Image (cartoon, rainbow, N blue to C red; front, side, top):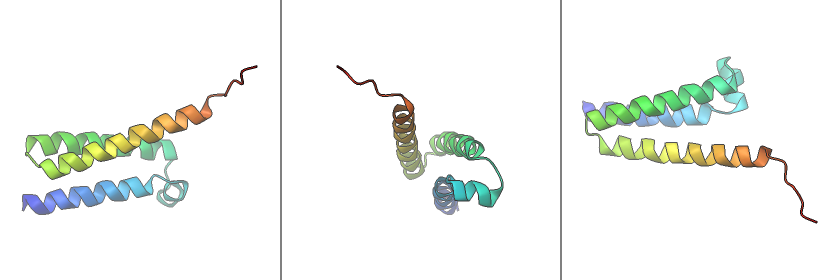
Length: 87
């Protein structure tokens, strides 16, 4: 039974990841920022529960998705900064 819950949680996290687009935000009727916050909260809760129930596959998936999210956020913030040209 716990195995099915683990795979269901992985599927839900992947669906939330795919919903974090402008189209997904418009389809669900919430802002894109709210979707990002919901996604991060879901990742943290899934990570804590995976560690508590010793579901290492789910914990690995959560870790990978958190790393990807952090990388995307760093890229997004660095693209916003104005680039100064050296003369």
